Amino acid sequence: MSATRSADASASDTARRRPALLGGAPAFNADVFVSRPLIPDPAAFSRLTTEVLERAWLTNNGPRTLELERRLTVQLGVAYCASFCNGTAALLTALRALDLEGEVITTPFTFPATPHCIEWNNLRPVFCDVDPETYNLDPAAVEAAIGPETSAIVPVHVFGNPCDVDAFQSIADKHGLRIVYDAAHAYGVEHRGRAIGTYGDLSALSFHATKVFHTAEGGAVVSDDSALHDRLALLRNFGIVDENRVSGIGLNGKLSELHAALGLLVLEGIDAEITKRGELVARYLDRLGAVPGLSFQRFAPETVRNYFNFTIEIDADVFGVSRDEVRAALRSEHIVSRKYFHPLCSDNECYDALPSVAPANLPNASRLTQKILSLPLYGELELEDVDRVADALLALPAHAAAIRKALKGGL
Ligand code: T4K
Image 1 (cartoon, rainbow, N blue to C red):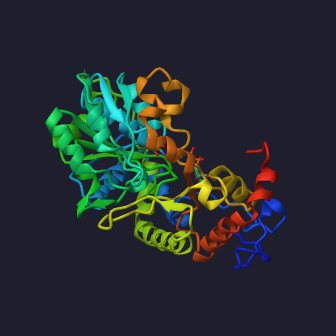
Image 2 (image 1 turned 90 degrees about the horizontal axis):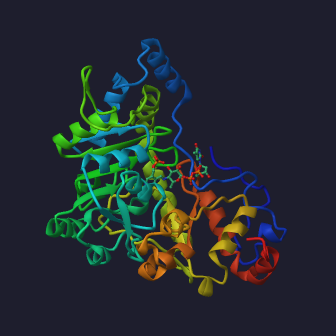
Image 3 (image 1 turned 180 degrees about the horizontal axis):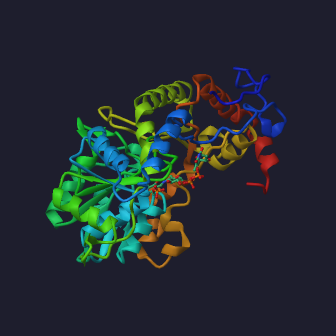
């Protein structure tokens, strides 16, 4: 099913197109969201969940959960996969499993879950700047921030773009640090022929409905280390060893059988989903790639991508319309873009007390967060939908003054 289009909004002459904000026909008749989950055949889901209900085994390492974990080790190219009820519980538990202390270096250009998980482990986040082109944590900034209290680094593969894993590993080796990758966005990504989950000590993934692969809510920690995997499995289940013994301060992080059943069906469509997303991204780049004032996240050419999202950077001085004006104008077209990630985590009041939040410490991230805008990307979109988004976007600069007037005080 493709998004609903306006019958009279097919003009490809973008210069003459009147933005919906200024009274033109909207690009779509119904909201087109930034992402939509891959939805498997409801009848197949009904069959699988009926079987789960009939078995009356709903959680605690049921057969569907174990099957999903087995399948994911193959899909993700890792030795071990511990499923979790969400990506936050996965990251929380990964950090806990390493018995860390003191400070943990991370990026401000991420979802709040990343630093929150550090804090919830009674560790102190230290924010470091990002590379302005890859959007990932900058290894040089990390090395400069290492102090006597530093115990680990939590880099994020932002939008599925592999971090500079070799640089982080050599920094960690040199300073005796652990690395936990926040791989929430990185299902299926490969870096130089190697699965992304095989780098660092542990990697935590999110299987939230907004992710390329999802279980509605869910997540996983993957690794190649059997002892760490055993510890994760223990901590995921309250630290219970057996009926007579609890050996660790665990939580309840288990994935249910119903979520696992959904995941097994989503896996069947995942390759087609990623292929389709790749085609849509190629079309976006065809349409927007050479437009002055627009730029894009840089991926190394050898990366096997999952096309988790499509984000543009808008230089208002060159494009003529600012990111926030673009976002508001697209909203009138029924195009729901999102500012991933704005504000920076370091700009949220809960982190005010940390010295590393100073904007002067984070110049690239501070600039980036003012410019980025994620556009709709999911497998059910059609190339024609991407054209409509591009047409709507490209029509804006010619109407910059009127847009600014229409939005005055309303952003
Ligand atoms: N680390 C990183 C780097 C992360 O990005 C995340 C989560 C985590 C850790 C933690 O993982 P989890 O504990 O969440 O598994 C969303 C997601 O809730 C969140 O999982 C994700 N990152 C983050 C980047 O995005 P919101 O607040 O933007 O979601 P929401 O509800 O606005 O949804 C976005 C769009 O998706 C909607 O406009 C429509 C569409 N949508 C959403 C849902 C939930 C659907 O079409 N169907 C749906 O069921 O946070």
